[in-house]
Structure formats: structure tokens, C-alpha cells
Picture 1 (cartoon, helix red, strand yellow):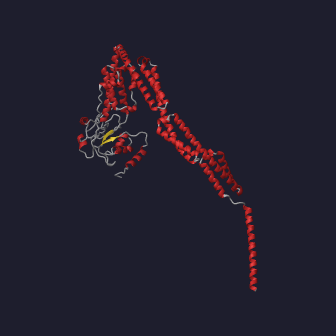
Picture 2 (cartoon, one colour):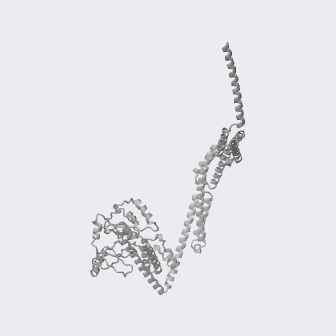
Picture 3 (spheres, helix red, strand yellow):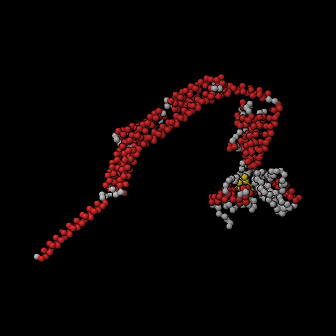
Length: 560
């Protein structure tokens, strides 16, 4: 009995304690709600942000500007209220932002689809103005069908499909229209050029006298070309303009043929009236110019025959002997060379050397013509042995003798028509003058041949003009650098050869690269090898160029 009473007391106490606990919990929750207010509206803000981004993806900022700006404004306000812990107001702003964004999206997707569809419509209208249906009928038909299908989608409210398809069609139509405009502009310009040419010809009195009928026919062709262009028959317009252009050529030829006898008669009369003294002067000047031109021509030939060779004398020289090399443009400082001959028998050695060098087509030249030539002959293999027997040498065509172009009288006649004899000398010189980049040795030879032909015909002033131009071209060629050749001597190395030719020994890799087929290793070259020596580069840093080329050829010294 006592146990039952005590258990009931315990139960009453537990119930009482639970009530106290719940009461305290209620007070705490109420306090928290009072302190914090409503919870942060994270979901509402995220939904609003997503809706705004979706509206932006369909360019709502352009096609539904007021609604889109309102949505953005409310979203920014919601974020600001959250930072101020005004969650209830933030939630309301987020909901409004979402609604505005959805509304902006619906407006934009409709307006955007209609706008691009309208652009396609305008492009088609412009293509029709350029007769696209005639120029590219298949392409035009395809574009037209696509446009009709897009219109059906627009009526069905498929705005997304309308936009995407219209975007692709717009690009295609723009390219189509650009091609049409280019074609129209090209043919229109051609017609205008031919018409301008006709207008210029119509002002010529000779054309009116000799080719009036052809001129009228050409104008008729131009009229037909313009009509065809306006009707979209572009190819017909081009053909008619071409026919008019050909008629212009015919007009010029007709006038030239009619005028030629008169012109020749005037020139013959002028030539007959020219004083004999002036004719003799022109003859002498032309002959002298041809002679000088041939001298320049010989220098150009001789330059190709040169084999550069350093001349060494025997030991124990009684006096210092200046050393010259086989080219006029190479002037090195005098070297002190030892020789074992006396002064008397040195001249005998020189004569022997000159005989041998002459047989080998190697010339030792003194530009001033006054310096002494004192050379002693070294024992060395003959040219046949040098080019045929040595295992370290290859056959090199050093002479490279050029074959002169033979010009027939017909060729000269083509370039110099009889009707041009009476033209002013200065203007004629300008006509035959070549640009520097077009000058070649062949053109020098050709001009000399023409000068001789004209001289034989008695046209001395023109002969003088061609000979003078040949001299000018030859001087330009002689000033240019060219590939030389050098025969290796005992004790030579690429460093010294580069120093000899370039005065810049660091440029030896240039010689190695030009003769890579003959040189196994830059440190291994052999006597009597014939090397090409290319022109040296200008305005470069030798050290940088050397380092670059050494890396390219992967040079590793054999001896250290």
C-alpha cells in the first residue's frame, strides 16, 4: 500500500516537471523568434535570380526593357534587405522580382522572334531588288521556303524555334545579298569604264573621221548592257560591255591604220630635213655608247669567270710584294709575303705565273693600273687534276659563261615600230627604261643587240637611247653583290676565308651552309676545294647571327 502511494507521488512530480520544461522551452523559442524575426528567404532569392538570368538569355534587356529592369531592381533590393536582417521584406521583394522576370521573359521571347523574322523579311525584299531569283534561283528558292516555314512556327507560337531558325536564315541571306551586291558593283563599274573610254574616243577628231560607225555601234552595246543590268541579267550585261570594249579596241586599231601612212610620211620628211651635221653627231654618239655598253657587258661576263684565289709567293722575299685578288671590287690591305727569289729572277717567276694563270682563266688585276705585280708561282696541280682527281673536290662550273641571246630583226622590229621614230628623245628613253628590280644581265645583252640593229638601220637617236639604258643597267648590276668562288689553299679555315671576303670572321657559318654538300665538318676543309661565297648580310649583329647559325648547324669543335 505504501509502495503504490509513493509511485503515484513520483508520477505527479514527473508530470509537473514536464510542464515546467515545456513552459521554459516555449519562453526560449518565443525569445528567439522575437530576436531574429522571420528566417532568411534563401529559396525565394535563388528563384528570383534564376528567373532574371533566364530573361537575360533571351535579351529581355532589349526586347522587354521596363519589365527586366524592374525585376533586377527588386532582386537587388531583396539582397540589400537580407543584409539589414529584414527577411520578411526581402522575401516579398524576391517574389516580385521573380514575377517581373518571368513576365519580361515572355515578352522578350515574343518580341525577339518577331524582330529577327522581320529582318529576314527585309533581307529577302532587298535580294529581290538585286534579282536574286535570276542570279541564284536554287539558293533563292531554298531561302524562300525556309522563311515560309518560320512564319508558320511564328503563328503557332513556337517563339524559340522561330528565333533559332531565323538566326541561321539571316546569316545565309546576308551572305547571299553581299554576293549579289558585289556582282552588280563589278559589272556596273566595268560598264562605266567602257562608257568613259567611249566618251574619250568620241572627242577625238580622227575617230569621227575614220570610225564613227563603229563608235555608234559601241554606244548601242553599252545601252544594251545597262538595260540588261537593270533587269537582273548580269551575265548578258557583262557580255555586252565586253563587246563594247572590243569595239573600242577596234576603233583605236582602225584610226592607227588610217593615220600610219600620214605619220610615216611626216617622219620621213622630218628626217630628210635634218641637217647632215646633226646626223653625223648622232651617229658618233650612238657608236660610242654601243662601245661603252659592250665594255660593261664584258665586265659582267668576266665577273662570272673569276675564281678567287689568294696568291702566295715562295719564301725569303728580298722586298715586300703587294697581294691582289681576282676581282676589282675586292681591295685588301697589302700583305707581307716571303719569297726565296732575288729581285732579278722574281720577274721571271712572275712571267711564269702569268702564263699559268692566263691558261686557267684567272686574272690578277690592278684597278689603278700603276701598282707593281710581283708574284711567284707555287707548285700546285693543274686545273684538270684539281677538278678531276682529288677525292675532296667536286666539279664546279666556275666560268659560267653566259650564252648571248640572239635577237632577230623581227624582234627588234616589234619593239621599235617605224611609226615611233619621230617621238621626242626624252620620252622615248622613259618608255624603254626598266625598273631596277627588273634589270638582269639578259636585258643588258638584249638592249645592246637592239641598239646595234637600230644603228644599222640608221636610227641613231634610238640606238643611242638603248645603248645608254644598257650602260645604266650594267652599272647597277656591277654594283650589286653576287656569289663568288674561292679555291681552298693549304692552311685555310672557314674563319680565315670569312675574314678574307667579309672582313667579319664570325660569319664563317654562312660559307659552311652554302657549301654543306662539300664540307663534312666545319673544321675539315681540304686544299683545292672550290667554295661558293655568298654575299654577306648587312646591318646585323655578327655575334647574335653567329650564335644563331652555330645552333642551326649544331657545330661542335673537333679540336679543343
